[in-house]
Amino acid sequence: MRVLLITGGWSTERDVALMGAKAVQTSLEQLGHDVTVLDLKFSMNTLLSEARAHDFAFIHLHGSPGEDGMVQAMLETVGCPYQGAGPAASFLALNKTVSKCVFRENGILTADWELVTEMPKADWTPDFSYPIFVKPNLGGSSLGMSMIHSAEELRPALQKVFDLGEEAIIEPLIKGVEVTCPILGDEALPLILIKPADDAGFFDYENKYQPGVAQEICPAPIDPELAKIIQTATLKAHKALGLTGYSRGDFILTPDGKAYLLEVNTLPGMTPNSLVPQSAAEAGMSFDDLIARLIELGMEHAAQK
Image 1 (cartoon, rainbow, N blue to C red):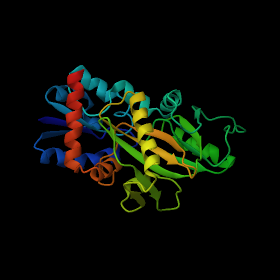
Image 2: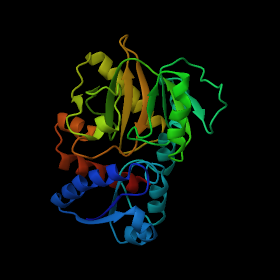
Image 3: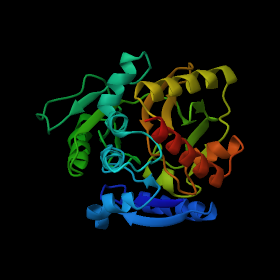
């Protein structure tokens, strides 16, 4: 097939998108596809004409545009199939506040939160106690995220988010370990347990994208019944948001066995260190198998529509 690989973009996660796109391009070519790479930052005006000239679009973008549904909506105007979630579902999942509202509505455990859209008054504090997380409401890859321990740190942490041009979401620290669960089709893949290896205390940007910085254990060494509960919750969230194709749910697992869903990613990373390929490998799928399956699911969804 003629495959349009859409990557780059202009979000704060541009470099991550380009990094993963290299691996995707290699895989697509090994699968026998004729690949055209389109960097959205420089080729936005040609997206629709290029999409019309291709049989399928593989989207490897992070943040906005990409995870916000805009590219998917554009592709649909010219009838070009693509992998993953559609426009509305992508928007719901990218917006942390909105997605958490959907989780709560569907009985899925998630941490309390507050949305902050402008710098509050000097004496303002959130309704929950420190330590807390301050992060961009629409961002990913942990860019702009801070874990703070006092009111004195609050305003600088908020300013860090506002400097990225985003509103902030604040959540209390939930003590536990991070577990992630990919969905492929209508099936939950093996869980991965994540242990940050430095003093960040959480799975930050460096832990995610620098080889050897974080320990990622797959399958996660947790009780099988608990693993099943997390997989069921991930699939429930996937369906509640209206997602298709694939996604990845990130959880904090507390010592008493409660799993709090942090967020669901609709365009999970495809770098050599990415989590979904690791989990797929544990399920017996090579990287090429995974890419081929994503194309198959995207074509099936387009045919159903």
